Length: 143
Image (cartoon, rainbow, N blue to C red):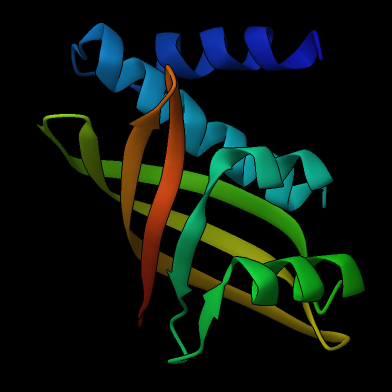
């Protein structure tokens, strides 16, 4: 657990060149945590999700929370690396943030290696002082 604060500080010192507000930094940290927990196949990832979260994948596959739990526990997809390469937009409306960012991912899908670059749109909402992922859509960036 001590690893997260150190990595968080490193990312903010070297990875985020813009000046972000306190709330923007909180949401960006949640996005970083999401990537890290997903890469480590850590069940704590479920704490980051709103109960009616939805995921739109680059292949057209759509998941709700139940689908995600089932696939995550079965290790249908195992990530070797998830690396954020860019945050292109962050917007706030009331207790909601939208983040547009790009990531590079590699891993195994049904025991087949894959590597791709994705553009993401994530919607985060504040619930009881915690930022929760409500929706995420990914699109593959072709070379």
